[in-house]
Length: 196
Image 1 (cartoon, one colour):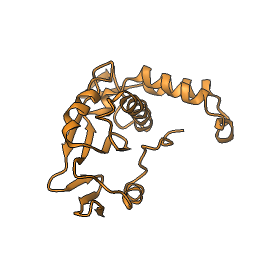
Image 2: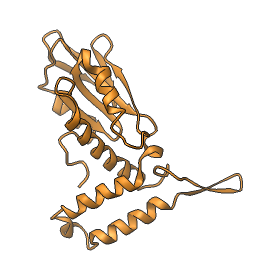
Image 3: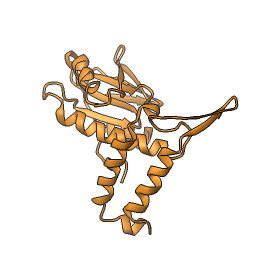
Image 4: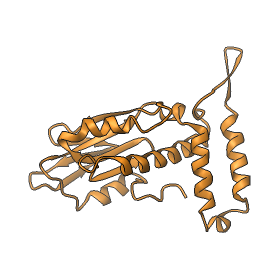
């Protein structure tokens, strides 16, 4: 269910395979976008609604588990609301976002990012829309027209109605971009060379 969008990157090798025949125009730029503090800013109710919708439309769910969608949602709601921790003898509850260290937090954050990226790419102005958008959890590699990077980032930072998800960005430097554990090098013939 998760990781089935065309924008999802499984790992560095998956991205390198995708990029092997990629060419980039002179007026395009490699840009990396990163969400600041994704886990602690992920809106739980909105994400759980999205997951419920995905489960309701998953015709293969019964082939993978004996749990029905209501059972799964009940377990997720319990897990996401049990965000207590103890520090220096004081018990505290995290009121927003996913709990750091919880095994389900990465799953929840990934689903929210999937929802967010869908909205971002659908609502972006045609002249700002990235040519590629490849995401690993909260790290995104995109190729976009050089003059639209700031406008697109401003759009990204306005689509979360909670105003909690914020993207930082970094443009390529001297034709080189770092993403995951790769160096992506723009070549003079417009091809791309990938180094680990």
